Image 1 (cartoon, rainbow, N blue to C red):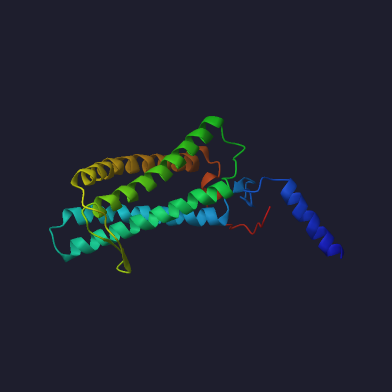
Image 2: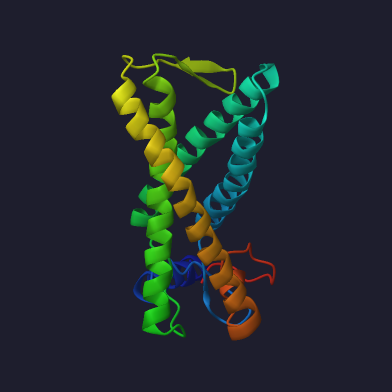
Length: 208
């Protein structure tokens, strides 16, 4: 009976105390991102690192089956990124990123803007890529598992989608570079434990 009372008291303190997103704390006491947020972040990063070189290699090859296979992989990974980013946006609305009380307001603002711009470009690129393929009238295979039907052939709309996709890649490079540079600055210059907040718990600490 006493144990259940204490447990209930801890749950009440958790609800009334720290913000809901701060489920874990780092060794330095900063709020750690939720494990779901961490998983979605690193899966997105891995897929982004895969989708870019797939496109570079595919474009460089002469027309042959290998080129087609690489483009299937590129499109499939891109559509997977689209689904995960939608999931990340929904999850972030449910579970906002934990605040960093030590970060200056300007840095916090820059970080938030960069994150939302990354979300936007990782929505725009897969959608424009799909339209680039679909507006040719062809269906889009997804990892050779199934195909997504094409659309009515429209050369004008296809050229617009192609332009968006080609220009968008430069925004991807710039935003990813800014994100990596910012992380490196926090890690090596500021040394404020920002990267640790996005890593799994390693110090045995549990729910806050």
